[in-house]
Amino acid sequence: MFAGGATADAIGVVAGEAVPHPADALAALVDSALVLRIRSGVDARFDVLETFRAYALERLVSAGEVADVRRRHALHYLDVAERDRPPLGHTDIRRRTWLEPETANLRAALDWALGAEPALAGRLAAALWRWWLDSGRAVEGLGWVDRALVAPGGPAGVTRAEVLLARGNLGMNVNRYRSAGEDFAEAQTIWNRLGETAGEAQALFGLASAWYRQERPAEAAGLARRAGALAERAGDHACQVRTLALLGAVAEGKGDAPAAKALYARALAVARTLGYAPDIARCGAQLAMATLAEGDVTGAAALAEEAVTAGRDSGSLAALRFALMPSGVTALERRDPRSAADRYREALTVCRDTGQRHEALNCLEGLGAAAHLAGDRLRAARLFGAARALLNAGGLHPEPGADRDCYDRHLAALRSALAGEVFQAEWAVGRAMTFDEAVAHALEPATV
Image 1: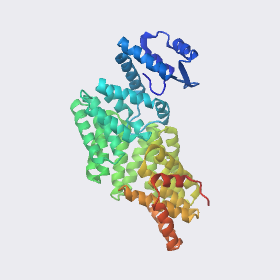
Image 2: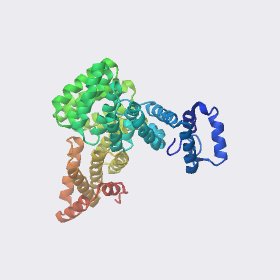
Image 3: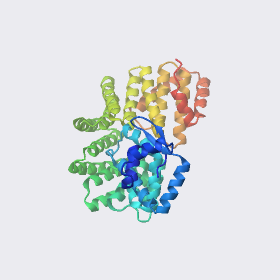
Image 4: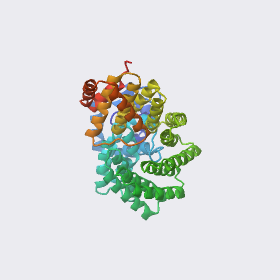
């Protein structure tokens, strides 16, 4: 049943009562070379020779046991996927570490369940969305949740709401804001009807985020306040923190810097009280940028470093990336190009590995500013040119903020420092780069 091998524990679970001593049976199969040990140690994995796999499958078919074994396989990986599911908006790199080797098994379980038990497929899809997102498979994840939602006899009730939440969050990360909003709205209706306050709060937060991304800040703020009130009632402090942070972003977008800073500070205070590292990283990064916008570089740098430390402690690549970029900006403002470049390169590597294209382009601009500060003006012009061209090609727009002000200052100074034809030539080289070429160039060691 396994695809891509399996652990001894998984083999024992799926074998079930038919094999009373699975460890002994597995050892005998390894000794006879019918099963291969493909990885040793604590994370030992095993696989079977293809000829033996085909023969064994024939025997299962003739015994009429295939469906039962496939179901045990799917249920085992559902348990794996649901184990220690992260709260809204965060995952742990350690979770990725033990899910990643099971990629082929997870796909096989989903594929079987969609045809045989669509409700089980829905639960599995809902449990995996954060992993798909953080492993750079958002598009693949959308394909699975789409199939789960339309399958005859598919998820209903709470499970359907969870799958809609999964599709909404994945859609938000590939710029499908309108359809994501529709998913969040349907999920909110389901949870409201069932009296599930925590689920309704998460759906309302998702809908608020979708409106915010569609540049409808008033609607976003209203929904975020409703989500925050429900989250507080449900005791969902992680969602409560995120609604405060979203309200801060709305205030910042309106140019109300004092209100934004106060909201970010409240969100960070709650996150610190909880000791929840991913939110300390995110809210600390937002507060750092608001502090920088007031001109307090020292205070912003301290907040940014706290955020980076929390991001590393959290194990969440998304939280770490979110914190690294403000740390890069504060390093630029402190005129420390080496530290800035280190932060942006690390953030860019995370963006590349997790498919966060928009944020990757922001990193290119940060590295362009660091190159300018270090005196490598030609490299700076190429990186700025690549970032701007790729943003335009993707229909993306730079968001205002202290980081944008910093990059724009460096770009203006760069234009003034280089002869016009030299700047235009290097800018054109950058504009001609593909996304992969620009990222590879940005990650090369600086020569100055």
